[in-house]
Image 1: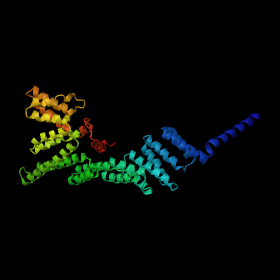
Image 2 (image 1 turned 180 degrees about the vertical axis):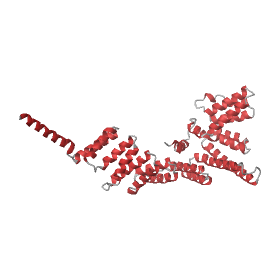
Image 3 (image 1 turned 60 degrees about the horizontal axis):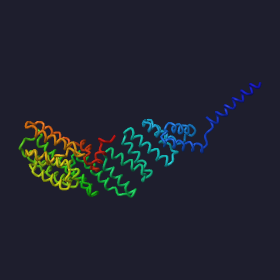
Image 4 (image 1 turned 120 degrees about the vertical axis):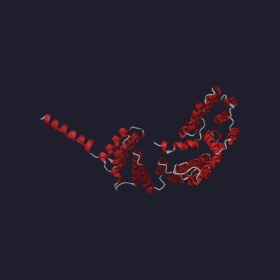
Length: 403
């Protein structure tokens, strides 16, 4: 009898315990406390523990939208954005959702889409947030990021202006760099005149944007190459009227690039290595190579220790068979701490000519390597001799560098 009483009592106690632990709903205060604890765990990087807290809240309160959102966020940050998207979509159609919750939900939807590389829908979610809150700083900042990464520079500029106005800051420098990027895309599409107008807009926005002159010169050079290729296509006879017109256009356009690159080297003599070989090629094609030495000496007046310019000047002396003069000029440059690869290659070329009369082939190969390096964008990005911060930003925010 006593045993039966104890057994029944034990069953009742177990039932009561189960009820209070598993069945009895948590109080609103307890749920709020659990939510805050979950947030603390999430912020401190304990995602698994935080997930358990939010999951337990949902088991007790299926209407707790904020916990659903956070669960999806944790899943996305655990490298499963597709599953996160499903969770967030499952609550997107609910009517019992506050304005705050709606904004938080669409922020997460935007990030879910971004992580699965669906930029169109990621952008749409930000635009939806701005319909609810037109000055939402997060949405505006995120749109700038998205438009940069998708190279929609005109749209990026629109939201950068909005952001600057909202924060009451002068962002003319960054906006000018956006214009440079916009111009670069136009050049890729052979919209040369339109691109140059945009480059001029960039200069008007920020007077010290020297890199704009580099790109204006480059636009003329690329357009010149288009006409040159047209002239030498198989469809046009050499010395025909059409051939002559295209060649003349090519020469005139290339000539217009020269003062732009000189302007850049004058304003940024430390960065002149970027245009030296472009100037050299252009002047050679236009039979104006005698001007090259003058340009180099002008750069040296404002930057007398410019290694690349000294090396290029030495190269001119070498081409005149003044190899000893050239070596004397470049002597000691290789020992400089910041000697560039270009300088080292030119020195090797000079030494090869001096040591062997039969070095024409080696010198030609070295010339090709020097030219390829100086005009290669990847080399320009990695060249540590001097750094134009604007140029670095342009390269870092180009499609090939966006992951």
